[in-house]
Image (cartoon, rainbow, N blue to C red):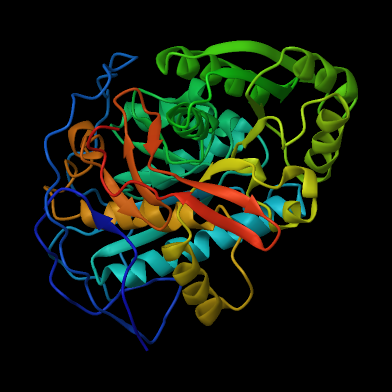
Length: 419
């Protein structure tokens, strides 16, 4: 089978030689053809200033140590790129354990597709507590990990970060909580702020200037509300109402009425699943139907079942481009069987990024400068880049809800030029 890797870098980089793949935990039989290098993008505006000062490591990794992981078939030179994978393999939740297993498989698939026999994946358990996550980070660094992919949860990242900083080892975490980002912690996750930014900018370009929102009364809702206020102001619009409801659905009717009474021309609904399918009819009953107001959504709308709700027809939401994602799903099914969870692409892109930067000087490959390249990178879910504050930006598409499925209303950008 011949396939093309999904991950490319948006700025020109030297090509790694095509070599056979080394995997400690997985042996696969396939070959990959490197995609043609895209043209270099034009100069970008400078990235945002860093939010935190960078910690100076007390015990930086600077060279090979006797305790670093070595395998029987590992070459003596060059220095191997040891990559720690810190995920909740023994978490108390069976669904979390299944997600961790899928993320590891995706990481292995990315390593295979990289054609770099000098990258070694090493695993450690994030567990269910911050203490377990910190212990996992210590074990990975003791084995020579230059960079750690994971952990999944914010409390784990908070616990593991000081351990990693002490040795100058960056973390590429999958947490969505921006509070843990910065000073060596980079969030490669689907952050609600990116989705809100994209959907507000697109709605404003279509003449929508009076925004209202229904958000759950939790951390996610707070993040959405904060992003909405800032992005609407930047677009020259006005937020006329933000109504909260309980995550279990209590208070939805009152919130819907409050939003409808504010007479907006666009309503952002930061909810998915069954509760989303209840909100559309509630808004319509209060005089704010999808025929009168433009409905907007976040990534929680990326669920094919919502097309069954006619009151959501014509709604717009921001989500990753689907083209390369479908290819990834096919690759994953062919190698492992079953469908990958939505978050599986994060591990693939993280390890692909590591492979792209692996040609650098050992123990100085994954610098803040390299990781925060303002040109960004292109992965399975489209382009992304890390800001100096550790958060990430993504280039997202706008999808429209129609009875026969989701349709692309505005394509995802190919570069960060003007983003």
